[in-house]
Image (tube, rainbow, N blue to C red; front, side, top):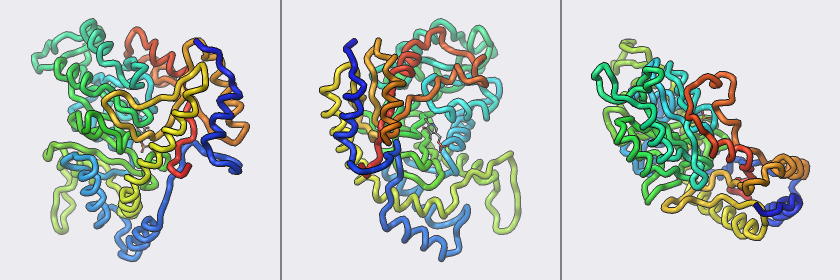
Length: 391
Ligand SMILES: *Cc1c(COP(=O)(O)O)cnc(C)c1O
């Protein structure tokens, strides 16, 4: 532990951020002229709702950008997770491994399937699930499925271990190679929560393309936005067709008949939102470049501040730097709220990481690793700082 000077944190932020603004939010969208052009075009076409050319174009461009064979656009990242989990085979009564350190939507989507999130610990280098610790945990809890249907169950609850959901925190890739190894060994499919990591890659491959399915969010605070929106990405044509079918009320294609043969969802992204998305995607490479420049200015400035470190992209990966973060040294936890208080009273928005999932009332009794020590330590030491591309 190094002594930490709270006012040095404020002056370092001020040195990087633009002067003369009354308030600098954590993350705001950046628009160009193209958004107005496309949205106007969409309105004038009359096709503003769940069918239209912009949706198809957005999906095609998303598939080109991520390298995933298929992309299916939906109303938000949470609904994308819900459908992706269902298509990965998650059923009522199953357990799904979810990091304790994540946004609540990851766990909620598991609940929508009637399954239980099973909370696991993170590692400090990536802020994502620790594959070695997950493997050791599986060795202690997993037994082969006694009903002979393959896979493993939790020996203490008898529930099937149905999926692992790695989440790429703040846009930094998890140790996805490590997690794929563990997942293959234990015959558990991976659904990647890449909601925060559009534009981030691991060993040159886009995040969200390592599991059976991946999920992206286009909420207003994410790296690009469609107002509200999300996408499922996958290399599996059959799963992609299923995703499109389930998110459009499970309707059989027909020129006039309403023939639905499963309980489907009205989760399709409206054309109006996709129009915004097409414009945002055009701008994404430029946004990524600007966010990288901002990140490097933070890196250089906080390099000389003692008692904390700026979170850099993990080895072997390239981050979109969606949200920059500072990590207080162990032993400096008591400064977190002082820093949050000082910066927010000076018009610079900062925020701690999420409250951990296993402490939220609806998940207090969910299964969990015995020790979530790293997630608990990260929770007390992380601070997000302003990260908009226009800074
Ligand atoms: C934003 C986010 C989601 C959900 O996306 P929405 O589009 O807001 O529904 C899911 N998981 C994580 C980790 C997120 O950050």
